[in-house]
Length: 284
Image (cartoon, rainbow, N blue to C red; front, side, top):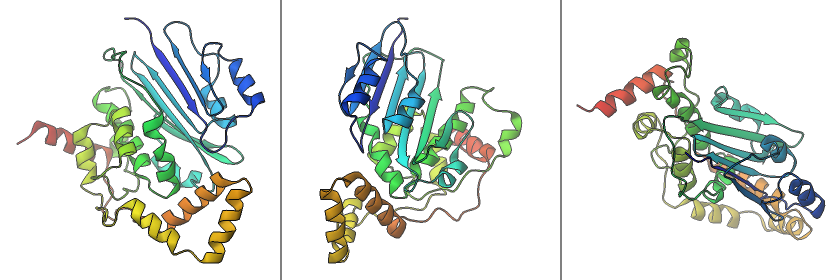
């Protein structure tokens, strides 16, 4: 099997200046580099940089894929939009981790499956995942729960993934809407190899979302209802050079005021979820 690795980085909130692009260029002479992106494929050799450092310094999202079964997605958000204490309940060993810098939280999600090679022809891109940042900023934690579920789901493929006492670990807060994922969330579930039966079992304890009106319509109505003086102040901030900060602030406020609460059902153990998924998979 020939070796293949894919690296992509994306700057969403602020483009890289010329000096930063030169710094990144030193790490790869063949990469396609712009003010907002870095893309490179390797059929031999390896990337000379450290993705965690590049995310901390320059980029807001990172995608890694290797055809021997390794997948990694990293997202960076301002800590005022996604604080570490909100993420920590969903962290699981090396599968789903998070840390903070002075201004940002970095979410690091990975999935490993060495059971077989994967097709080289499948298109890889960060684009389907970028919307997760807005959802997390708005208080939608379904992506975090999916990452937690994917981590323990590896136990079904690798019996040595966890110690036996992890059977009793309790699930984190179950967000509403697991039965009606958004497009970015569906992409994340597939990327992290969340089993369909395991997701269906997890969704049984997830309250449904009110989809009428839709999220975009609710956001539009919420913005329309802001006081005129406040909208003028926000618009001045956009014009004077801080559109990303304004956007993040509005998403956070919208989420805080409209996001559905997590499930109040009793928390299930990892064993409860995995056993229920196995029974569902086996059928009647």
